[in-house]
Image (cartoon, rainbow, N blue to C red; front, side):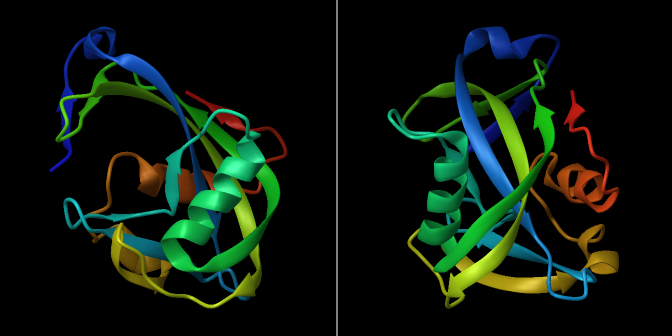
Length: 155
């Protein structure tokens, strides 16, 4: 199971990893797509790490496709997140400080489904998300995307 550790500048104990996440609203912008992670049971935005040889937009669309079966089009960058006080420790022993780019995306095709990384996927009313067990700062990413700012949040 992936563990998240918190501590003053604990990110120094890991290596940097660039990741992407996608906020995908329904047509009414009243619900957001969340998936339940197979490794720890927490809810999250479709997300994952960038691979060598791809752009951040390609990484984001690939991760959404792999985890949900949906094809998406990137609309805008909503935030850049890099918490030096958080460290992800994976079952294989890798320790990662994540730098995450969060995008708002819209569905352009495919069919919502599951993968080996997800056990559930569904659109949830925005009011319910604050009561869910959502990983890391994904709830903040949803809130930031809702603000419709032209400039991305940076933290």
